[in-house]
Image (cartoon, rainbow, N blue to C red):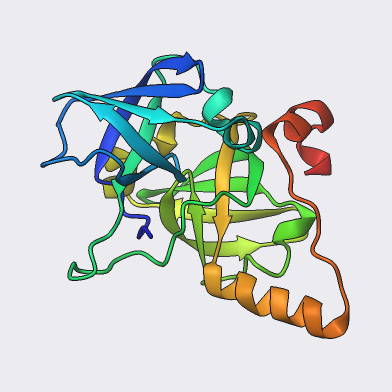
Length: 214
């Protein structure tokens, strides 16, 4: 379990053979083999490490459904270790299980903040709502507006400085995890009303179809 408060910015060093290698300028304190780390919002298991390099195993399913397969080598990544039971809880409950890939639509300035607008798939409708929480590439953010095709969040200067979200240009893909409590309510309603959960949008589908269909 994570909180969506980013602890480190890593850099993608290598990808292939089921492994993802990430470097960090500031090492984690006492990392543990086998622990869970959120990498751009994706919960991965730490297999090997030294002072400044972390190596994770990546399933084909993980790469198919997230932007970890699409980002160029040397891209910056958001990193967060799993939360401690006795730690201070900020952000919101984030599982590290990405629900959907989504396209960045635009950035714009709003006072001293930056507004990020992201495409919203059919799966996300009803799960993303004004003043609700959403994790974008692992970052806990508050929704400021939503319509049938997109939603917007605003990033304060501290968030821009301490995460890699500013690197995600319009047209690129980000990982979305919708609010866990909202998903539980939706699944229960689907079950009770006899509905079926909608399909999930993958990065490949996003790339092949364009954001208009996301």
